[in-house]
Length: 111
Image 1 (spheres, rainbow, N blue to C red):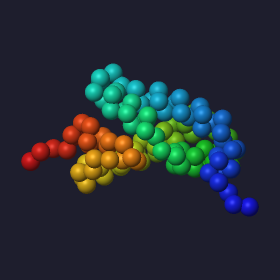
Image 2: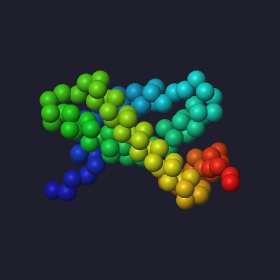
Image 3: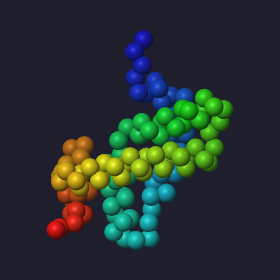
């Protein structure tokens, strides 16, 4: 039987739904421009494979707790930051079929 991503997610489906809300809340900022950028990032989320691995590993080890959510959020944020960094360095204007952060806010320094 071929495993699909949904089959792999099934044991942690509830936790991934909760993580969605947790991550959105963690990404909120009182700085308007930063809040707008992070809103755009969260809205264009990918498959979230990295947080999925964090939750699966925690479940295998016994239990999922607050530290699991923090760890999953940190690894997703780090991954997202690396994508934004790549877009800036490569001067990319598209990410996953949409305008990149680089294209929308021109965050690359001009020399």
